[in-house]
Image (cartoon, rainbow, N blue to C red; front, top):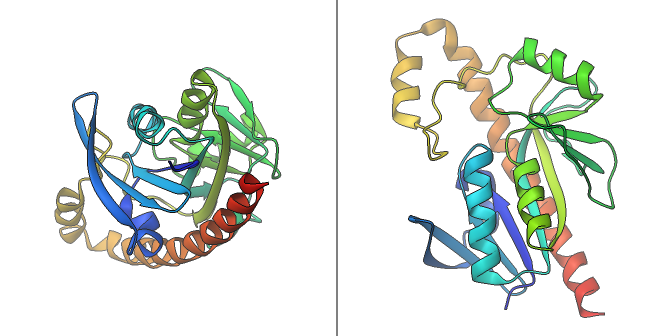
Length: 229
């Protein structure tokens, strides 16, 4: 059985990594997931947000019985020094909703999980409130799900938007965590002032995905050797 469980939000974040992995469909709590597997690793893309991440964590623990759960994906920078494409492995993950902190046991800095896509103003507030370097929507929920099941937790993230970047996508996340690409595209198409930002977001996301997948391959290589000892 796989010993490293990976939870991502969207498949586009990890597509270069899982392209040649085995894939099967599993069902958990009334929802179907694509479960990607390769050697010691299993990966599920659960959707955006805490609830989607919680369900995906439960699903991969049930299906793969991992020894460790890793939350992976894109983060927004809160620290202006962090640039697009930088790998961020946080030592501390904080749930902005309830203040619960999780120590990953490795890495550096703090990641805060927030309930929505954070724009520039919200990023400033989060940095001031938590002294965090980056923000995402899922890591804290994955951490709490892993702790509930007695599974070790870690996080490996890549910056997709810098501290001053204005995110144009906060209103296009469905209740199940899916990103509504069609509605977003229609919205942007009729608002020319968003075209430049959207193009930059796509370019940054593609770069972040490539970097993340390289970092994950290196992580899995190290982790597999450690688990074999």
